[in-house]
Image (cartoon, rainbow over all chains, first blue to last red; front, side):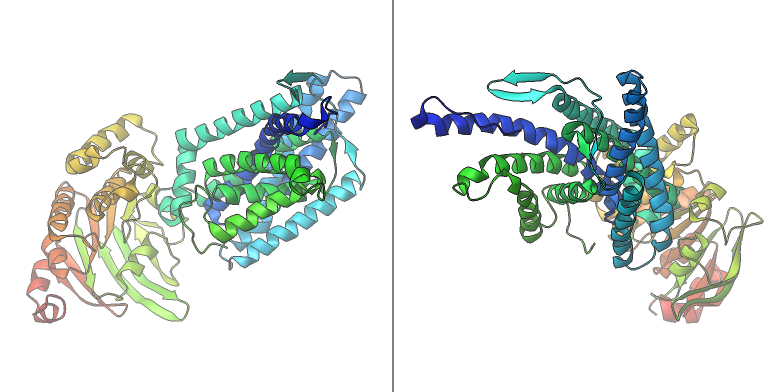
Length: 325
Length: 234
């Protein structure tokens, strides 16, 4: 991703290289940030409605990626057209993730609806471990190659490179998020979801079936997660049963950064975290005199998480700091 | 129309309502009065299934409703205006009213009822687009009542509609409550303001420590020396 060129004039090389990296890292950050935003929405929707941090959400994304590999990969190997294989892979991944999200809520969280707050939180971590191990049993321990669903085209703009996949990731994320906003702010289901998030007891007095709204939050979040899973797979071109862990943690950080429970916050937090990470990774070598390299990029997410929790626990767009764990 | 028999509500070991029995006839406004903590709100919450009763039955229009899911209560025709108003703070006034009509599909009927509610409370019409959380307490109470009426209920349950409001607001709101009742709405009114409640209603029940201790025509309760001493400050 981060190519360092030998500059012809050593005495001005540093400045040129810094600017070169800057635009490149902005692009990389936007792409990575769009993925974080999609995943963060799954965390924030569930949290907004029932105050639960669904730590298994990262695993839902991972399963979306692996299912796409199985379905699309098999179809491509069988000689079917890539477009068809891609479409089938994505559709099956979305359906599997929807079933998974619905099942998680039904089996793991609904029985604990009235339990102390810590109980479902620990259950969520438990479900995350269960799903990881299930995926390991099904898909094995090795890295898997994600089939090339999108054309490999390179573009260049002002010295920075980007690919068709990166453009597709940003576009798909933007469209998906736009669709989600329409659903939440323009439909009856969306209104019921917002009402339930604000006051579940009164929402049920209005005739809203709370269980159904909560299930809807899980289902929608998981569908977004599946889309994110396909995007991650296309971007890195490899996948692994443990990939959901770090991705989930970072998306959770993005949700906290934007103010957890807030949809716009999750989107902004995701993009912002992507940018912070990419710029951080691009300049960490220069900042530390070469002591730390770009493989340290993961520390930025956690610096952000710790910083937000210390100085603004309600996040950038959060309205209140409640007592929610 | 509403028959409550042997209703019992407890929170952990604390008995909030001890096996009370009362009824509300069709078209009637009945007041349930009593001091803070007498169990009035718990009674209403148990009827509307916000909380589970420990024992007893509630029948509405001859049908047992004490075991149905909370979101079915409004479909049976019972609308609760909850204690503390319970408006959705980050929904607009229009959206709050739309939530009241959540389980209705008749667009034309909803539009008619909306105009009717704006007629009762012109203030709401002026603030359609405003978030409910930014309204004054009185306006929120108007909104809560309007929202309940948007379900076109057969019966209205009002939980302390005067609580925390300026006297002028209380007057305005009770004006509407009386109009709605006069149009034939069956109403169960819970109030700490006993005078106001008894003046507005036909019959009343007095609750004390989870039990009904006195009942009768509202007019006679108003003149009852015990009621006067305990609730009317005389």
